[in-house]
Figure 1: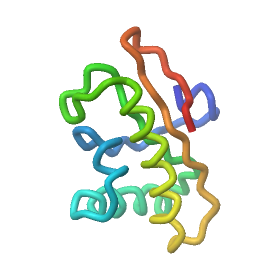
Figure 2 (figure 1 turned 45 degrees about the horizontal axis):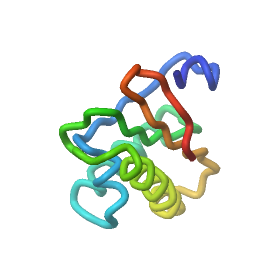
Figure 3 (figure 1 turned 180 degrees about the vertical axis):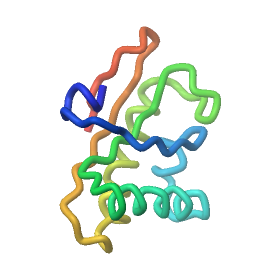
Figure 4 (figure 1 turned 90 degrees about the vertical axis):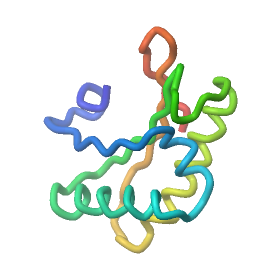
Length: 107
């Protein structure tokens, strides 16, 4: 989806079970680990977009769709703050992948 929508050749994947939940809850060791990996992507690969995704039937964040959407939006807002120290203009998008594996942008 990112390759098509943003016309990019490569996408760095940084995964964490229930990432939308983790990133929505505020500072933690997991967030620091994710942030270090994202910084590598931004600084070394000149990435301009960070996508935070949640998906249907997530074992790491087994909540209803509405809660996932709330977590994704909160995650995106929080992540903008985390990335301020890099001082680059990074676009942050929030994505929901539904039960049909269709991607919907929610942030």
